[in-house]
Image 1 (spheres, rainbow, N blue to C red):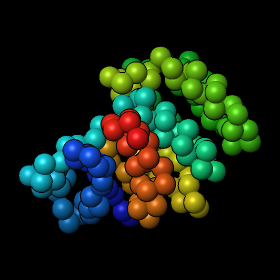
Image 2 (image 1 turned 135 degrees about the horizontal axis):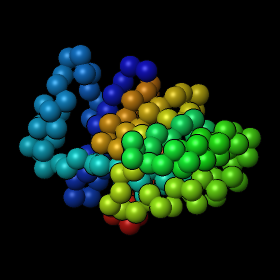
Image 3 (image 1 turned 135 degrees about the vertical axis):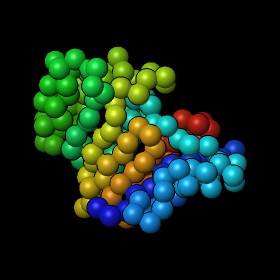
Image 4 (image 1 turned 30 degrees about the vertical axis):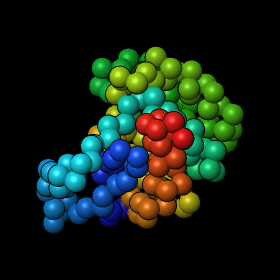
Length: 155
């Protein structure tokens, strides 16, 4: 997984900027995007849950949900157990959504990151709007962009 991208939103669009952390500084990517009128996308727990669901609907697999450090260990264990069952039965997503419901409000970032497998590639999606993996364009156009457009623009 070599590619990194940072999610941004404009007045009417969602986009991401690919960058190489070995060649570019993160703050420089942010600074350039802001100078063009773009705002950083922070992926709250509600959006993370929607991305998980969109991944499953697109025949992807949820590999891991990384919760914040202050999350109870019981919740972390329950989430881990549900995810292991998701691989054989996507209908169990309802249980995962119920387990994460307490965290899924628009102001919450209790889900730090998620790992998904989509179209034979593994991706990591972080709450700070960074995505990591190969062929980020595919994940962005098929999963992330539709979820963010619905969330921010209602379409």
